[in-house]
Image (cartoon, rainbow, N blue to C red; front, side):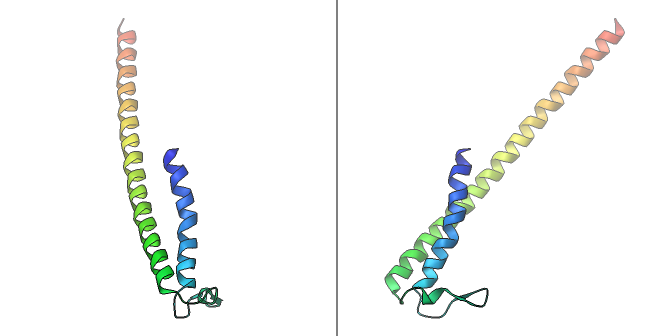
Length: 101
């Protein structure tokens, strides 16, 4: 749950930071071929660099969270599978002993 509380807002923030970064660049950036993001604001190198750094940090954090999520889900899948198999073996032993008596 905590992972989702962090992950989903970051997924929303990431493209917004990218648009803000494109707004302060000194050349034309067109989204979908017709939305001019660079016309939103005048070129400002320091603001663009700040958004570029924040965009990069957010991307690294998202990659780490995706890897963490994958590891956690894999661990749970293997742990649950092991418990399920152990339960099947126990049920089979009980069935064999009841059938033999």
